[in-house]
Image 1 (tube, rainbow, N blue to C red):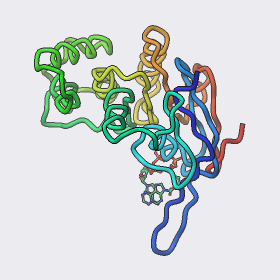
Image 2 (image 1 turned 60 degrees about the horizontal axis):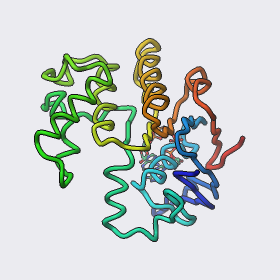
Image 3 (image 1 turned 180 degrees about the vertical axis):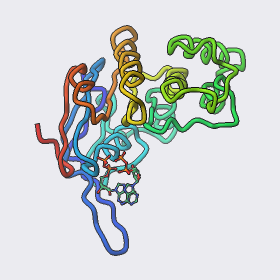
Length: 224
Ligand code: ADP
Ligand code: ADP
């Protein structure tokens, strides 16, 4: 069963003087529970692909379907629900807030959710931090952590929302190979033990080979 289905997706960035075709009629489906990696040279459209899958950006043309239903048929409320509950993002550069503690960073996205009490927020954040092995670092600040630990905080922040789908854009791109491997192992565990569907952009062939399927992009199109 496809959780995300892209049909004829085209994305054109138009500025005053130039037009860039970032995605050129992409057809792609991601099955529930899959761990897929996306590879290809810089500028080939990987980040754009992830933004469109995660409903952060709209395609110029084509259809995005989530759970078999075109997103254009969802109401604004339903779309907000999908963005906030179903999908979690992890970025290369962590996007943590430096003057908030680890725990507050992880709780933050839950603040904007109706129906999650302060107590539940805290419990979920602590559980997510335990999952990523940072249960003992909750009162630290991001500047007091290594790059790998910061990325684990960012993953905990995504997990606290209990997303079914994790979209990770070069999650190990800023990490040395040892820490990168730790993050990769964590993602593999989340996929296998919690059934998360994961789409990960990576430049690391060794990491990609650990996933179930590699999608290769070049110049806005899938080439394999
Ligand atoms: P990466 O290669 O890691 O994906 P990029 O530097 O290509 O990083 O892009 C990072 C983000 O910057 C993109 O997702 C996009 O939002 C923005 N971006 C990239 N290229 C351009 C551009 N030519 N003009 C404006 N914004 C851009
Ligand atoms: P990748 O993630 O593979 O590096 P991107 O999806 O970031 O590729 O970018 C694909 C193409 O679209 C690139 O040519 C980039 O310069 C362009 N691009 C990305 N974001 C923007 C933007 N916001 N405005 C204009 N061009 C962009």
